[in-house]
Length: 256
Image (cartoon, rainbow, N blue to C red; front, side):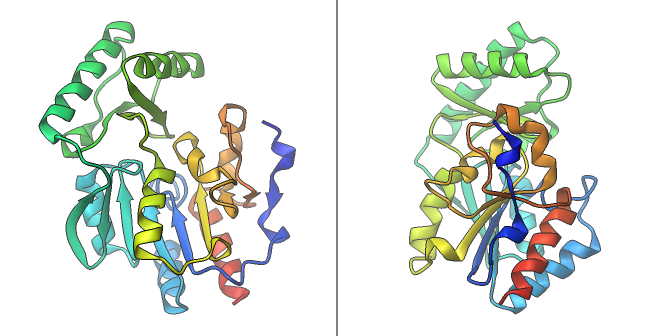
């Protein structure tokens, strides 16, 4: 993909935005942590009537707490697998699955991958997951990741990865799938021009598909993945990680 096609966020007027759907790790975090600037900007967005909906690959166990404690409207976990609202700690499954059977099948695919890639290790948060199975992305090359994707597809499962983890998942499940379930039901009057999506890595790629989400943004660290993405964000921030999110949020607030 051609990085020169990425436009600066300053090229667009953001005054109509009412909902920001954002990735978490590498997009809201700065150096793998939430900082005080993030809490401040999320609070300011809420105060001016802009909802923030986190959509992350992190596990249901993590995201239930995140949706409750952060000043956000809610959070989608496991790349489109489950939804948690700020005011409701109950998980909302995005699709009908037999959880016990599903977990067993995911485990079998992971064990198959381990026979090909003995260095992979189950992620520490995998025990808190419902709809996907994760292992650490560390020490896997782009070629190995492509091979893993091929094996998962051959077994009837999807695969994606972020800067943190690899995910074995239902083949249809991604962040766009989750958003397309949530938006019509819970934000029925929202216009496409009133929503933006933002992320930083391959598991955010479905949110960069401009046929579905015309106002997509990548924080600057997305550039390291541009040669691996089918879809590029329409715009890119000048700053990386959480500082990039804050840069965009400040611009959105200033144009109200």
